[in-house]
Image (cartoon, rainbow, N blue to C red; front, side):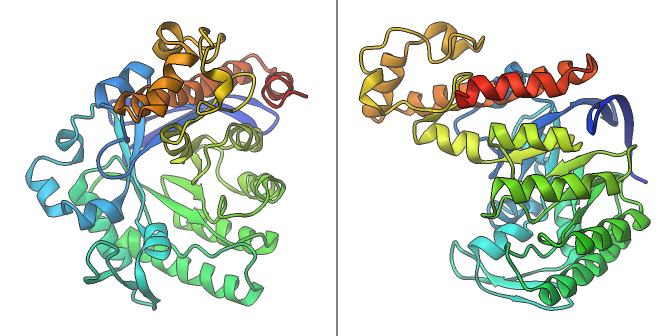
Length: 368
């Protein structure tokens, strides 16, 4: 199936280091994927993402379907060429955005009908149409259409939902016409037996990789960690595992500990544009007056070009002045920070010392 080749390199408890290939493109894990919602990671150029070292980014099917349209992107040579991105691209199904952004959403066996959040146009996504859209975009990894329920939800509602998601997954596989990889999505809210049912059913279908969906939707960190802890071991060891919508450093390390390979989230870029920055000694808000006269770097332990060249005082000045450069520098730093964290975690797993690395890193970050 597909063209994804996977190699498990090391395990340390449930944490693991691996690499996989999408044609000639090689991806090392654990890896955080920046979110390029509308064919751009906000405030970043493709060249800057390459400079940081990202081999894989995420594009959003819902937004690209609405504007400029997947047919136009196909006509212009595909998403890679359209945004001048040499690396790999994973596209989500757009289902989460339909449920969270669209108006008057209606779910049936056929798929989901909705009104565009842009102009109110009535539209529909089906498992088949979503795959065709992603094939038009030309992404390297495609996601199936699934139903994402909030936590908590009623057990019977969740049981019906995972059955629908499974039927949609079967239809997605039948709809594929390309060699692009395709991932199934495990749902089940916070019901362990339903997560098991969903996971085992999808594994039987034989996807190229598996995502854990329905988390990072407002539940506690402890519930997220618990669900990952009992779901991940149900997934094949010889295929990538992807935790959707997670980008907080604490959640990333918990996910790695549970055996997750891939993550994505808008949090690091969105926070950056609002002045929220990661440092090795904890999160800071650059708007705070304490940074007004600080000549030091944002993070003395960070090797990114922002920390090497600009002071906290300057970054605060840019933000307070409403300068576009504030969003660019803040975003560059946050993405570099998470990419570096993933690399550190990978090296710790390869050295069989991940548990100690996690304890030490979190002690500094959380100030314990």
